[in-house]
Length: 103
Image (cartoon, rainbow, N blue to C red; front, side, top):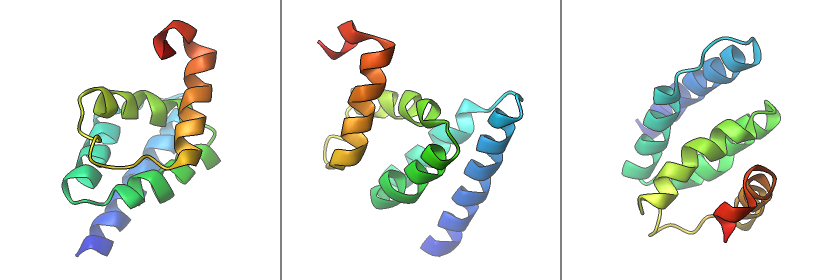
């Protein structure tokens, strides 16, 4: 069942990335739902693994980080360890976006 849900997430995220790259409006709700699902079922390895890589490969890491931000700030990820590679990329992203936010 878990693999079936991951397949559905992959399909939705792929469609989301494709729409974004084609200049179409992307539903932020799709990203929020995928992230929330991964957290609720304890599949953060998937969130920080394959899903992150999909956004990175698609050249749309900013979408991933903007979405992840709300979950970090709300404390929904406080019981999970964010992998160093993602944390480094997130910090680099915010350095480019808003230095004051990091302080």
